[in-house]
Length: 147
Image 1 (cartoon, one colour):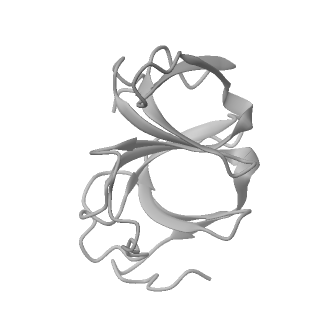
Image 2 (cartoon, one colour):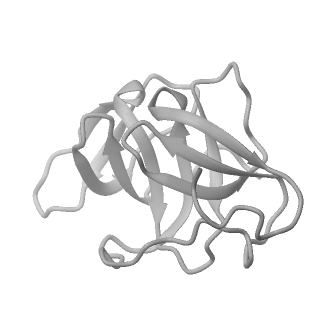
């Protein structure tokens, strides 16, 4: 899987302090300390974003999504290669997914959500915003609820 997303991808940047910015990325790369987002609001100027200020960067199908929808935290319909995991964020959110790019010495990693019906196509998770990573082994539905 390629590690560098295409310029102009739709993203939702969720910051560790709770702020949310929707827009397109200009120059994001996992190893860089800064990148720029062009906010989706008409006339908004590009924003400089320090990667370390993020909780996660969500690469989305569209900006609206369904705010009432709860993504599944199981692997019954998951597809893709890599290690299955549930990321438990410090703010209480848990996301199930698959990663092939986890490295304990890196500040973040990409994952693909396990729920095929989510609005998120891919997520770059900042380790500083993670309480714990739960590795899932065994049957596909081994994790039906966050622990």
